[in-house]
Figure 1 (cartoon, rainbow, N blue to C red):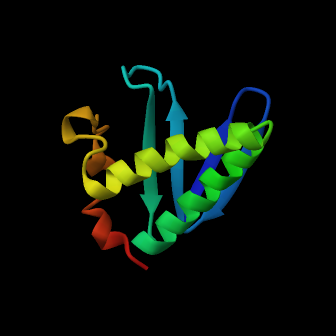
Figure 2 (tube, rainbow, N blue to C red; figure 1 turned 60 degrees about the vertical axis):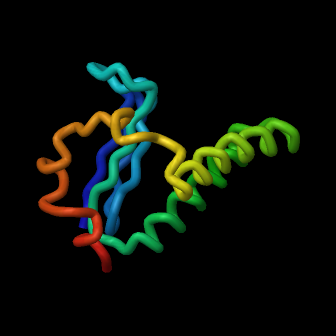
Figure 3 (cartoon, rainbow, N blue to C red; figure 1 turned 180 degrees about the vertical axis):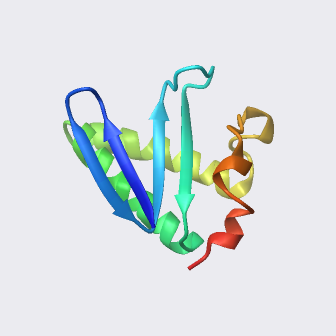
Length: 112
């Protein structure tokens, strides 16, 4: 079980669940535009399904009209296709923020 506390100085959210997938935009102390984190125990299938559902919800909230939503979805699909065929983010582009401290093994070990 993962316990999560998010606080922006005004709002405070506490949640618990099997796993957490987070995207931090413009992380302090890092040169990256964004970083992603995964923590918990679940299958790769459930992780991908939850990420897709979450991204769909974000597109729905950010897009002001159908055209905006299509443009956002298109950009995201390009990233997903790149990840699948291996032409997306390269290993040199990934900043590992002490993965060993977060996971005591490979992500494959965290299947439900």
